[in-house]
Amino acid sequence: MATMGVDAVVAMGYVGTKRETESLSGLGLVATACQIHGLALVAEMLPSDDLPKPAHSEEYVALASRLGSELGADLIETLYTGSVDSFRKVTKGSLSPVAVAGGPKMQSEVDALHVAEGAVKAGGAGVVFGRNVWQSKNPLGMIKALVKIVHAEKSATEAASELR
Image 1 (cartoon, one colour):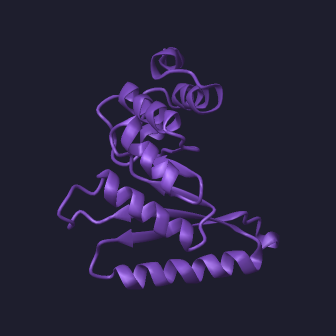
Image 2: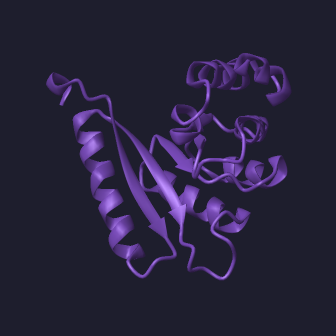
């Protein structure tokens, strides 16, 4: 794998779906292969929308994150639960560092910065934002703002200055 320049693998784990067993078994196989080849595994752990509570509920996100870490993930990517206190329960319950996924495009760039700030305050390792960066009016400014939040512990309000 090193000859291909691969450092990590990202694989999905779906919790609460009809095919949960298949999904998690597959994730376990990927984790084993990553360990054999010396690759990091990022497990994107997503609770199903078909569960009785919302997929981003603290209970389901914490369970999904813990499952991913127990299966061997080096980093968990998952949903933000909506508050620092609820996301702290997710980060504390995981055996692996947890990064928050950006999910759908948020209403504003500042909303995305607030999610990043909340995740980091809760003990999150960082963010895995795609469309909330590349669909931004100022993608470079958005990256700089996220770096300030994740690495310099700035607030979303302070970091938003990079968007101008």
